[in-house]
Amino acid sequence: MQTSLPVALSAQIAMEKRLDTIADNIANARTVGFRAEEVKFESFLSQASEQPVAFASTGQHYLSTRTGEMTQTGNSLDMAVNGDAYFAVQGKNGTIYTRDGRMVMTEQGDLLSLNGEPILDVGGAPIQVNPTGGPIAIARDGMVTQNGAQVGAVGLFQMPAGAKLARVGTSGIRPDSQALPIVDFAGINVLQGFVEGANINPVLEMTRLIEVQRAFESASNLIQTSEKSLDDAVSTLGAKG
Image (cartoon, rainbow, N blue to C red; front, side):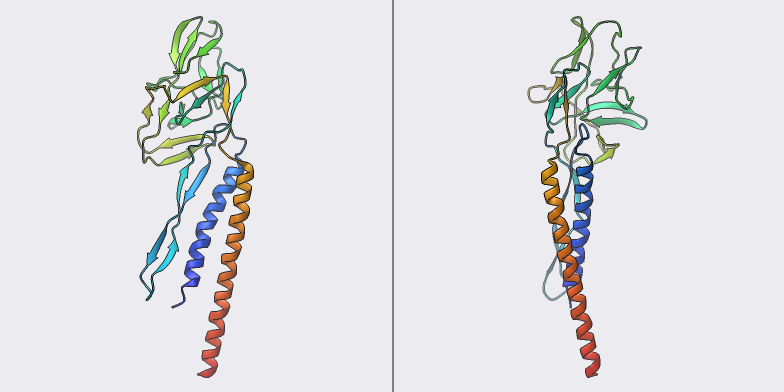
């Protein structure tokens, strides 16, 4: 039984999925708070032939938890997460978690994301400040103050272990289970006046793109060679018959 065809085909399917994720990562290299998407592949054995044959799995997507480059803006309405956690905003269909901490303040004192979504506190309630109360200060634990008076607290949340994350927009995610509020700020905290860039190295991603494209072409050549070999064998056997 010829096994090179299905093996090469499984490799092409896996590499096509990897190409899609690399292209998406490169396209979002300048997106604030963007988390790079990776694919983990595994091999599995088929016992259909006399000798076990290893095939590539279709791949499992996951988001990289690497921290992106921090840029100091000096804007008091910009904030970034130091550590593996997320801010929360109120989306149209529920809570969205994001690393993009850029905010605007409305005339009524509502703190909103750049997409117009309310910034949430640890209890899931929108944060409101005094629009005439002076500059806001955000402490490392997310505490929001104006003129020394506490007016709210920015919520930080961590994704539960094993949760499946779905993308929402460009930098937002939504887990399939309840996110966990951060209560210990020793290793995870808020940085006011900073924004976090995408956790992507464009040069590395371009290198990966070239490598995967070449591997895809090699698998394609293998399929063509295998098909020609099979056609030649069929022609030879047919002539002898």
